[in-house]
Image (cartoon, rainbow, N blue to C red; front, side, top):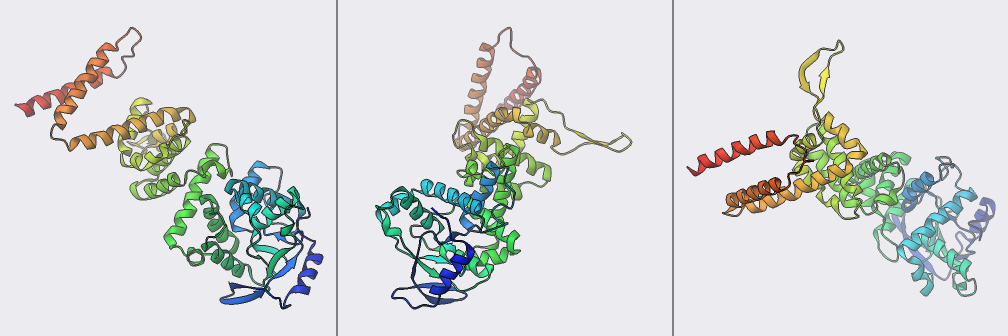
Length: 412
């Protein structure tokens, strides 16, 4: 099936219809006022998909990531390009299957007209058009009700006015599927780049607070960094289920840590939790990983046997021998071979601290902890074998002895 008439043929056809009265009309709030447009019929091959469709911007980035032979401006350079239209159709078909929208159109007629720009690009209804084209290609006789299409034609407008209309139409829920979180964030980011919109412009168009706009865009930035670190740049489908994770990463990273080094370590720890090879929901521990960050860092240094870096001057002398924050931990958490160990440490500390805080509320907390320590020491003795590593045990026993002596003093 042809995916859009050529520009001269398309515009000539629409020009003959534009302004012609019709029996049916459709109300659209456009260019600052509610307008009444005539509903016309056109062949289903006539309209072109809008490549600047907000819903598909992230999917286009993903498509380009999977087709590195294509130029980066493939979806922008020539809106009439047949290959770009077929790629957009492929993207839309995938969305139909993901949201099961084809099932709707198998049982229903076209209920609302597509909204076309004056030159025949679909401003609203790209997926509906894709669904009707797909079904007609499947069985032309069975789905002949989709030929011809109901459309309305907008007057000439600026890109900003088109964006306003798209934003307004996405507020209302009908058969339209929700944006994925990455598609929504990518839309806000792309509008800032494409039209130089401010956070205030986007907030007004999409009925958000300015802080929400910054949050969505920063969440996408973290997702981009995560995917790039895993050699999956642009593959947003890999993080569609992780909206909560990236939101918590943004909120905790920016508020709870004073230095950039701490923020970067927390970010990498969060990425390890997002990886979760068991397919669970470890990302839910991200807020707790922030809460117990210092304990996690201390355990990482101990378990991975890290040595804090020292800053040196240009002549090689130590600058007071001061450690460079958590640089040693950052190098370790960026190393993929440590991911499993990092997850184990985070889980152990988070679950242990959570349980400890619950038990602290009990009046027999001290006795319960002493019992646990006694049990742990007995298990340690039972676990001794010829191959047992003795590293660090002496230091731990010194610490245990000090704690026992303090408890004895308290009892006396």
